[in-house]
Length: 238
Ligand code: AMP
Image 1: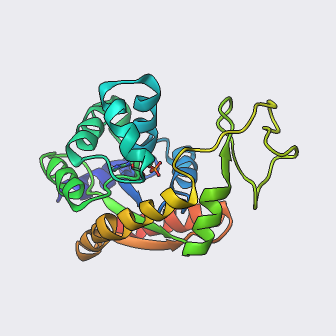
Image 2: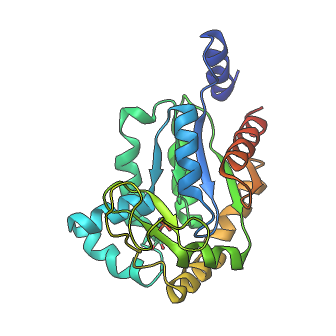
Image 3: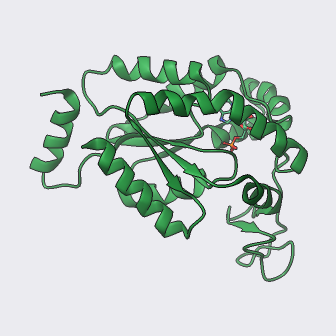
C-alpha cells in the first residue's frame, strides 16, 4: 500500500473525515484564492498558507525579506524563488501542517513547483499534493482587483462595485477607514496578469500532466465554489 493509501485508510479507520493532505490553490490574481482558502480552513481545520500574506507581513515588519519584497511586489513582479521557498519551508515546519495545508498563491513558478515536489517526495508519510485552479474571466478580475478594499482593523474585504460598505470608504463593523492594497491598481494588475501568464500558467500544466489537477468555475457564489473545490479534491484523492 502506498503512503497516500495508508493515510486515507488511517482516516477511515479512525472514523474521522479523510485527511485532506496538501492542497494547492492556483489561479490568476483576484480569482478569490484567499476567500476560498478561508472556507476550506473552516471545513477541514488545516491552515491556509498564503505567500502573499506572509510577504506582506514581512514588509509590514520591515524584515530583510520584506525590504527586498516590497519593491518587487509594488511592481507586480514575482519575488525570487529562493526567498519564497525558504519562507514556505519555515512555515511548513509548524506542527499545524501535519494533516495537510492549503497553499494559497504558491507555487507560482515551475522552479517553486519543483522545489515543493522535491520536498514532498522526501517525506515517507503523507498524501501527494493536489492542485485546484479557480477560473474567472479577465474583465471580471479587473473589477474585483481595482474595486477591492480592506478594513485594516478587522480584515473584512469589500468591493466598491459588488460588495460596497454602507458608508463609502468606511468599514460597516468598526467604522475604520478602508484601505486599498498598493498593488491593486489597474497598471500593477496588468503586470501581475503578465507574470501569471508567463510564469504560473506552466505550473498549471505541470500538475495537469501529473493527473493531480482540476479546475473550478470561480464566477459563482462563494459556497458553490467551495463545494466545487471539495468535490475536486475528493475526486483527485481517489
Ligand atoms: P497575492 O497576495 O497572492 O496576490 O501576492 C501578492 C504579491 O506577492 C505578488 O504579486 C508577488 O509579488 C508576491 N508573491 C506572492 N506569492 C508569491 C510567490 N509564490 N512567488 C513569488 N512572488 C509571490
